[in-house]
Image 1 (cartoon, one colour):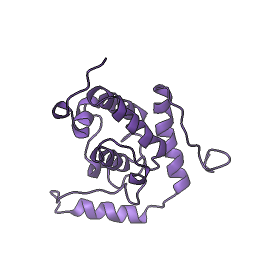
Image 2 (cartoon, rainbow, N blue to C red):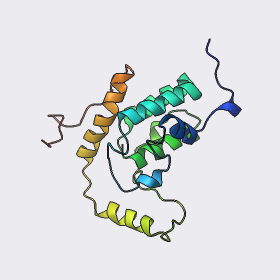
Image 3 (cartoon, rainbow, N blue to C red):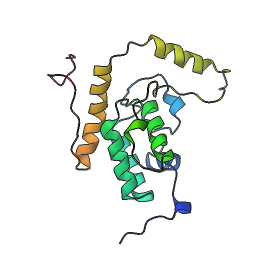
Length: 170
């Protein structure tokens, strides 16, 4: 039987992101705040790296909770994903659907940056003026999550909420 890491030996999600993405992804949600879904920020390869780290460092149950989270997550902006992942960790890796898909998950800023908070203000303004298209957000989330799930041999439970599956975009 595989040894499960002792609680004091377990890595945090921040340590897993730093270690397993090898600098390809920041663990700071505010770094990506207001940018929306961008596969340069977060894609199926990042998900696989993080999943591998969770499974190796924390265990199978935690990796399964990560997959359950992805099955319901609609905001796959890097900020929204990281905020959700930290809530899953804070909940002791127990999946609870109510923790996810909260309004404004894609916005985060902490502290005052070297511009005196200017970037935080710009993020809020950009987000308020960006045209929000839920069908397109859902479609983009699926284009990130589906390849990852296929790679680990898990079937995607949800489907796009349109007849064509393309949300009207060509």
